[in-house]
Length: 303
Image 1 (cartoon, rainbow, N blue to C red):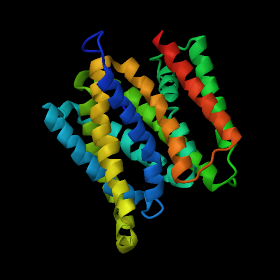
Image 2 (cartoon, rainbow, N blue to C red; image 1 turned 60 degrees about the horizontal axis):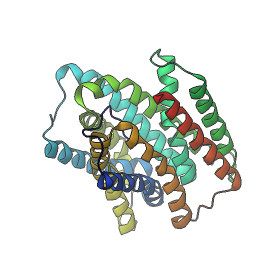
Image 3 (cartoon, rainbow, N blue to C red; image 1 turned 30 degrees about the vertical axis):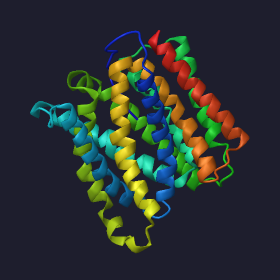
């Protein structure tokens, strides 16, 4: 997931390569749900994060170096960077990784796709956003879709539902991270804000995973799981973020954000083909209602 206040650098002309890059980004992020889900069958959630986050940190470091941006935040920003790291990386990862481990891949992708709606809700409660009728309908539609989705699985109440709630908590934490980080993003840029908060959250995530790392039988971990670690760290953050921010810079945030709607679709299809997670009719209906609500809320906000 990514946010920026960038605007198009140039108007008109063909942006085919940029659009193809954004389709690739959505594909990478959509496949990431299935890749992580498969890897979690062999590596514990905290151990997995403790391995992939250093990969992500190095990938983002190369991005910062390649773009010639400032490596460390000014001292006056250290407090907000740490707060955002705890909300947007530590809390988010707890909800995401444990939730994905306990629910269907498609459910996780769809519930996480509600983050833009939580951005609106949190902004409204903080007095930074005004609701109109269309936004309200979008929010209510998304909430209705979540109820349909969460109640639509064929798994027993308990673990699966806990997983759904954990992923939902991750979506809310990402919404809070987005709202609270807007001023820093405007001043410093989305790429730097992402890098700084990721690096600040890295020690917490690695330390939390040490016990799991020590307990894991690494001889039993397959090459596929190791590739999953690299994919989730380097591709889903490093390469995908590079393509995403290029899109924001060239064609603007509004047009770029449209491609985020492809992520849960790719996640659902890949989980179906790779993990044999066949969606039920009720889950498909919930997915359609959620995506419809998110689209309505986003479009209404831009008007």
